[in-house]
Image 1 (cartoon, helix red, strand yellow):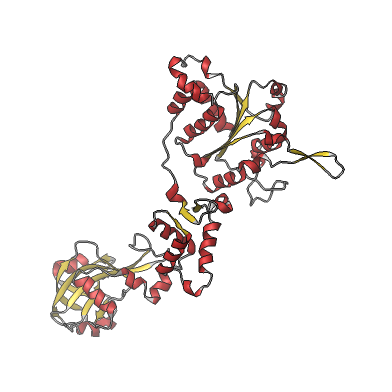
Image 2 (spheres, rainbow, N blue to C red):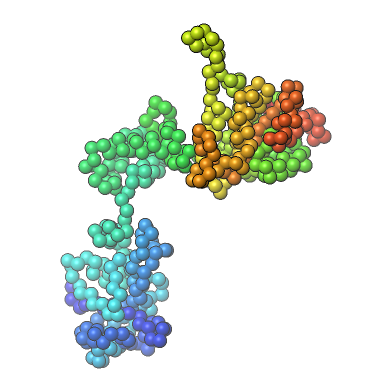
Length: 457
């Protein structure tokens, strides 16, 4: 074993300029800083290995996760062999070899102008540094990160959520709860997991809390799903999403036979008002057309950002029941906002403010209009809604804020004669667009029979 020490010396700055190129070109190293290092420099012997270093701090572009902390890095600029010591406490002659590629060493660094490293088999850090610098061995980053000092500084405690995500990715996105629990136990990444008698319950609770079972998607936390209500097979939501198909205006016009001018009119009104009621003849594919209208505006068939709710007779006012005096009364049904899932959908749009969302209400008619009118007015008078943290909260039994990236589309039959009687009144609150049947436009022909069948569904 070579007992010679190795030396790590600063690139030095003279008048603000780094001296690396000059040292290498002229074959020497000189200390421009404190005279206190003079005795140490006099210890350097001919034949000793020496490295030219630059030490600084980094936060970004580091080959490991620092959790936002600054880490010390020592860049090796050149390595060499000492050929002469002038014994003036300042200057030595060196046969330098420039390091061509970036060579960075982390954690175990020294900022002063000269650093003496003695070979010591009991000091693994010194041995690693010497091998890294002079023998081109890679630094064992993980070994340094797991040292108590740096572990405490740079590594954070792993959470149950992070471990579940990691394990599910390893298990192709889906696994039985018992497998998930066992894999997490084997990995031992969660601090003191086996000292916690309730660790299995913690994993189950984390899955339930951040899955659609608990409606947590309303807060943007829908990370997991359960395969079925009675199943203990859980999956990672991001790995279950299907690829989204692109969709365009031209595709919409081809599928619905709508004229381009009418499409532009609808889109302009919707973008301007953010809410719109489309009137069309009964059975003319309103549901088909409305979803694809939203897709064309999204430019992709993303079902996660389109919520269609079809009204039924359940919105007529409720079931008739009798009280103790045998007097009939109506049991109030859930409102449109509650039954449709709009509240959760609205929260989803709030958390994903960079993307647009579309809420479609299908089959507005004279039978259900009276019951849903209050909710419709609430949706269409969105400009009076305020965020949750506003000081001027609306005086309602619930606090609703409809974000700017959520658009409302209502679908109504223009053939409903009873609605014509209140059309003028409704137009005070709602923006209407009327559509003629596709069968009457020039583009429709015998070759469009299959399209007509689709539109009539």
